[in-house]
Length: 196
Image (cartoon, rainbow, N blue to C red; front, side, top):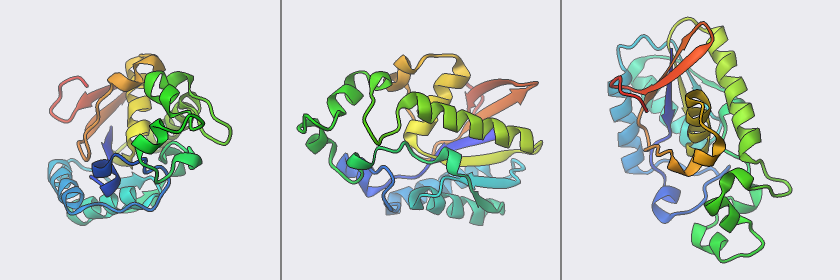
């Protein structure tokens, strides 16, 4: 069993800024969200926490680790989508820059391609390979702390929905989901057992 969670709130979330691979920390609310998530996850037998290497996911992981007592290990395969030209920029600014490719990203993100940037299919391939590797490695429950784009492509993959559904997937900050594996077949659910 794999628990999946997006990092807690950041200032970039509030400012509608593309955080990307920046060293964006959690806000006070984001730290509280991580504590609340840890309370939900406590007692579920999580043996290890795998975190994206970015500060906002590591901070979320450490807060959860302090409460549930599981160690944190960095897993690069679950890092945020890499679009370096957008890192730290306001989304409004990107929208007004015709060379950014942001309008295509907003309308049809599954068609987005930009030199030096990762596209959704590449992100999905990387993230799914990482999750399957972790699932094969552990029989006990684990926690994966990652990012919005990664969560969206994983949810689509494990629900058998194409990347065209990317914008339809809503993932709140620090809200755990459960990915269950049964003989290589995966299902994804909300922590309360309802389908995502």
